[in-house]
Amino acid sequence: MRREVFRGEHEEFRELVKTFLAREVLPHYAQWESDGLVDRDVWRVAGKHGLLGMDVDAVYGGGGESDYRYHVVISEEFARAGVHAPSLSLHNEIVGPYLRTLTTPEQRGRWLPGFCSGELVTAIAITEPDAGSDLSRVRTTARRSGGDFVLNGRKTFISHAEQADLLLVVARTGSRDTEFSLLAVERGTPGLTVGERIDKIGMRALDTCELAFDDVIVPAGNVLGTEGRAMAYLIRNLRQERLWIATSALAGAESVFEETVRYCRDREVSGGTLISHQHTRFVLAELATSLAVARTFTDRCVAEHADGRLGSEDAAMAKWWNTELARRTVDRCLQLHGGYGFTRDFRVGREFVDTRVQTIYGGTTEVMKETIAQSLI
Image (cartoon, rainbow, N blue to C red; front, side, top):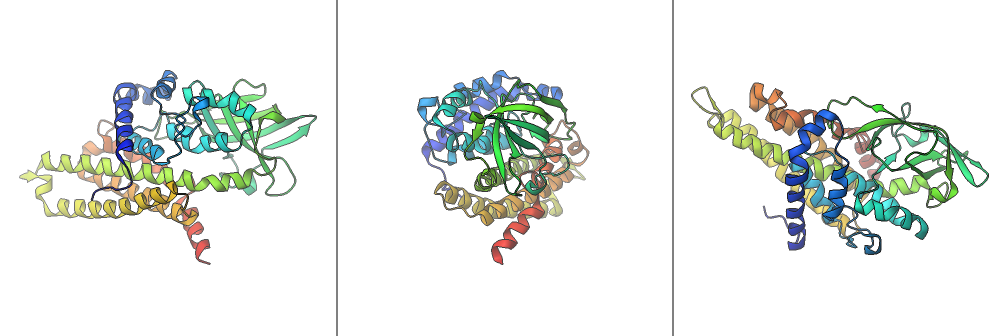
């Protein structure tokens, strides 16, 4: 079916993203996967192409365009290309809203120009070794000391941690269970230690590390928004984070499926092509139908979010449904590839491990179902 969520200007932007990927990312991606890290220069090139800070005010070097659909174009095209690093969407969609909406004019002047140019890479640190993403169990603390905060604690599974110039850290700043604050910690601050890269099974080019904060002095001028209000800020941004994961998961699954159809048309087995066998055709028919139905709902969610009307339960539905669908799709496509599917030479093999985490990060499938259930009570 024809997609109606995008207009001509979005499709022009899509061609720009495709060109960036073809010229600046795909030729180097295998090496980055091997190295466990992208070339830092790619961030600056992304900034020059206008792929960073599209919704940031032009006075800071941004695009000045608040239309959420430009973010969707980036997440879709990166997913269709099988590219998971650099995660421009994490930078733009997850960290970006905090820097745009919670900062003072002085803070915006300090951070947003580099955010848009690619000179300043960002990350957000919420998850802890013994707490996961459960904020009620977060143990990282920031206590007042004169006009500053003293930050102590540990974070884990922090994407972009190795290259990040600015970390947004969630820490307890009061005695109540919900009293958290969002502190910006700059690269090289004494007491901040970036640990070894976590040896992930997938998304290996996306640097992911543990962080340690040992008596890190954070100036009061580096608190984002109101002290003690981080919980509300995080909840407000969850819908966009989950929709990003949903759009990325679906676009990636569609791309793997399309490649699998081509493979089945060409692959000779048992006296004919794979697609000449009824079982293969039925598998492909089932996947095509599931993806088409998910596409309709997802595009509706994108349109609703662009208009500021997306509910948290709808975002949770899209996130759990699309990520679980992507997992099933890649698994069945790998089976159709036979032994070749179990190699990293074929896209489906790489995606088998890369996409597995999508049902976990941003809130597990089980958390999504509970969020939906709570909306029904």
